[in-house]
Length: 112
Image 1 (cartoon, rainbow, N blue to C red):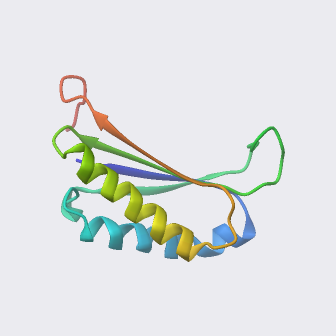
Image 2: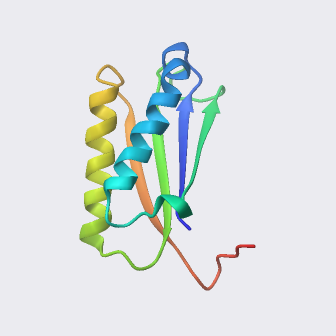
Image 3: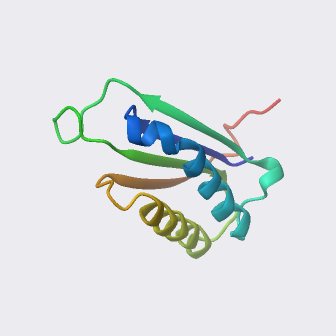
């Protein structure tokens, strides 16, 4: 069960675009070889209290992708690159876009 959490600065511009951001992520995920949409949990987490490089007010978008072990490093890297390319195209003026893919440990992950 992959999880994608989109943390973003509570900002008028990003608030208006969050549906487009989520749709873009879904499109990239669907085109990838490592995510099955029927298993995906995607959520947006607005942050109203934050600092970027110690400063207030600079908008950011951070995508956390957590998936079970299995996909090769190159497949995960391709997903990261595709997400980054799509989001930087969608948000050309946003200076802070980051993506992190992590593997969940099946020995410690629990699901009902």
